[in-house]
Length: 150
Image 1 (tube, rainbow, N blue to C red):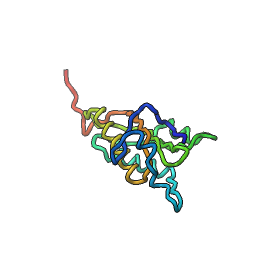
Image 2: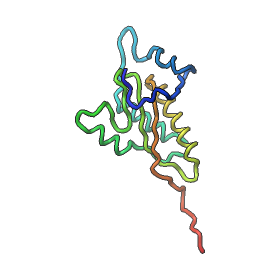
Image 3: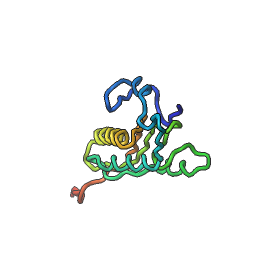
Image 4: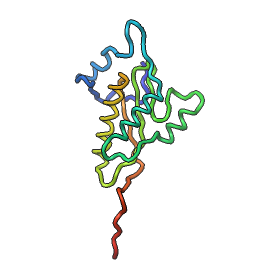
């Protein structure tokens, strides 16, 4: 199995609870005796983007510019707009670009977004999420910003 963007030193746990070894040995719900299901990268992208947008403190979620460019390059790996699918089609690595609402703590917002994206992708598709990399490009103030007068 070739997984795009996975770091073998990162510990991950399954939604059912378990160790990293359980993740590699568990049977995928996408493969059965009657056949297997393939999730298109675009579907995983939409689920990840919507999950990020649902997270408190996130103002917007877009695919990164680099991901959009790489997905259009001839001979590029199976990557489209912020989502890369592993070669065996049962894992996904997510690359998100978001804006965070000011003055929310960026670390807390990205942690919540990462957890929600993993949960939604796992629940909705059965895909194993190997990583969720998040690029925060801006802080967005709610309403008018108070100006200080000197």
